[in-house]
Image (cartoon, rainbow, N blue to C red; front, top):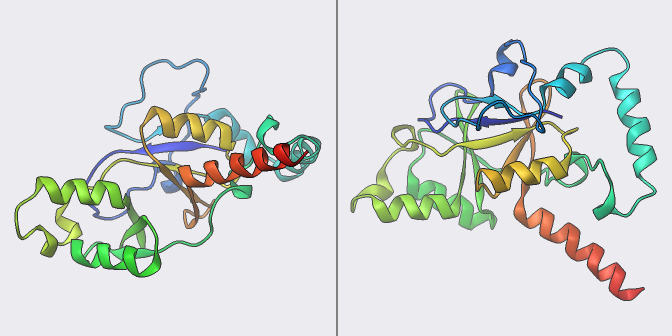
Amino acid sequence: MAIFVSEPGRPVGTRLPEIFRGRRVGDVTEMTESQPINTGHSDVTDAEFQQASYSAGHHRALEEYGAAAAAEPWDQRSYLPVSSLCTPALYSLPATATVAEALTTMDDHGVHHLVITAQDNVAGLIDLRWLLSWLHESNADAMSHSLVHVELPAFLTASPETDAHQLARLMLAHQLNAALVVDKSGRPSGIVTSTDYLKLYASVGGKHGMV
């Protein structure tokens, strides 16, 4: 259920959190924050659960916990896994692609987010609003710039078991409208956006209205 924030940086190598490269996870909890989250490095925000989730029997415990919460309305569940909310469709571009190619890909597929890769590794997550803002602040030939020379923004990463309520709080805290969902092997498996949350609560509100 870990949530990470990766620092801004150029898309060189992998910018996934170090836990996917064998780093020991420290003891950090959301409710007892020792210091403000620093986007200068990758932070774990619920490492206690991350450590427990890889212990024996964690899948059974999660299933039992999820089953107990299943009887509650979606918007009132104490635990709502990101996997039940995220969009599995992902579109990516290599870091060698240009800004113009990124905009074209978004337009062709009707999406606002792209995963940027470097040698098949996750090197960043960009959205249309950030890209347009970067273009506005850049020079006239910025459309031809390769993304590998651009400092990409910070981005959030979560696991499929992450609590969607906690992820929403972190998205608000970092003023980010999306988070990349990553499996245990470090491969992207989906994306959660603010639109997904709006759809969830809009559908719940519609059901309440019908009742």
